Length: 65
Image (cartoon, rainbow, N blue to C red; front, side, top):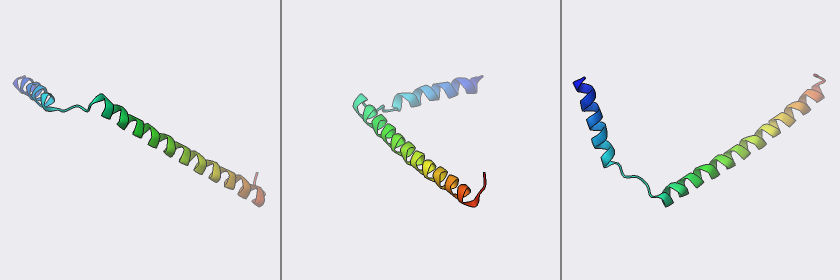
């Protein structure tokens, strides 16, 4: 029980040392993450469409249904 109390006191002490980003920096970083997520999603969507189209074409050429 003493160890748990010590642990939580240390957590409280360490959390006071944390420096949090400003709202401007937080929103900027969030925007960048969302942009990268969108670009990556589009990239994989186009890649998937290309492979899908190629696979359908190849199966049609080989006569596989």
